[in-house]
Image (cartoon, rainbow, N blue to C red; front, top):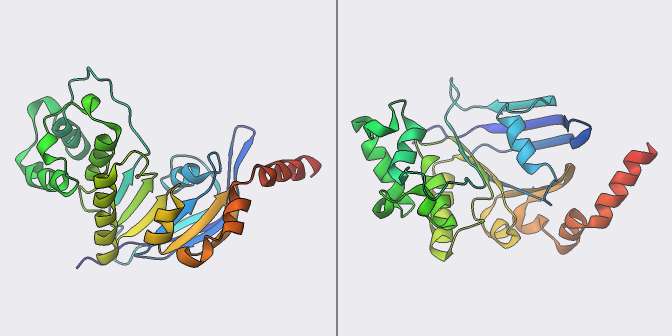
Length: 247
């Protein structure tokens, strides 16, 4: 079995875009091999925290990854959604090839990647639709393909940005099976999600983020009605803005 994923430490992370404060003094630890969920309102900084972790936006503070082996492992990323023109002549197989090989898509999938790509598509129930155009898929089917591309190569750390947003019942079951597999193989999962029932059932830890960390703890015990109300309350956000103006 692989060594597993890294622990992640966010220490006093601040992020400002233009004149807008996105994150303020975020202190957070993600345990190695755990399924850790981030919950909070839209605009609360969850996706921005991902971007800071991936090095896509400048930030203050420190973000460190403690890999279990001598070398960094593989990071997988599933974005919230990708839009495809219905007329774009890119099939599911073409998309998978573009994600994992340097060889031009029009030359087809190289023999090296054929087996892993087919295995990943089979794992998410999309192998039979591998010749369909990406733009002709339903939102749930595209989400499954995005999950599949994150499986190649097998990740040690995976970042999920609302992966359940468009999934149907069968897709949700597929996702839950993937989570169980990642937990068993000690992949570190950092997961943005709005479905709080799913978080309660499936996550080990949960962090409530609205520009700053409002709560953090074991998912089943931490997501109380009072904490959720405070996290999503517009009143809380208005008071926060008033505090900033007064300061």
